[in-house]
Image 1 (cartoon, rainbow, N blue to C red):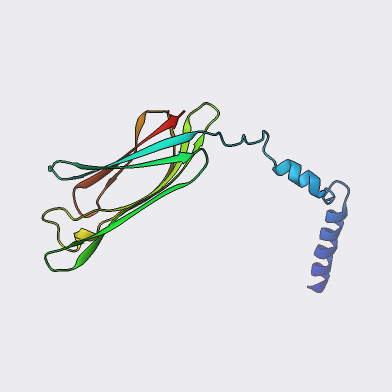
Image 2 (tube, rainbow, N blue to C red):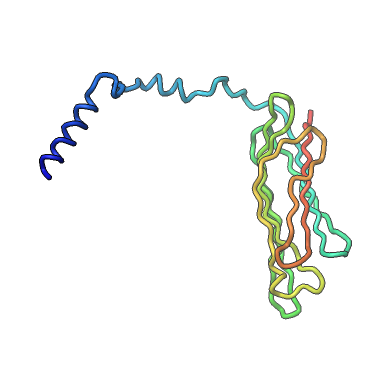
Length: 178
């Protein structure tokens, strides 16, 4: 048994050292590594332009009329914006339920003058009529990156409540302010 193990080990060692079996690994200089990691074209600096971002949240429960809320942020190119709003509603039982609407956004003007926007939204609205206390705490949390045309609205998200027929739509519109 030990003779077979020795023979197999010797064959593996000879195969590994045979010419052309392995390419010699030479250390890569740090400057070469940095050159390989660098993008092919340098990133352009931020433009000195403000961008108005409007998010319209439309909340509809069943056949009832939809309610809409609009959040507006004005940010510089590649700068972050943040809005935090919070309130509380008392349910018939006396329990307080928080109402939250939080938005984080960061726009970037692309080379073709479109607007790439990273958006994070947290939405926890007031309970609708007939909602039980358990359903009163339904919330939506989303993060997405979208490309918007200047001044044009786009439906960027539509979600459904997992426990009811409630639907929430989010439209985004970015406008370059010159």
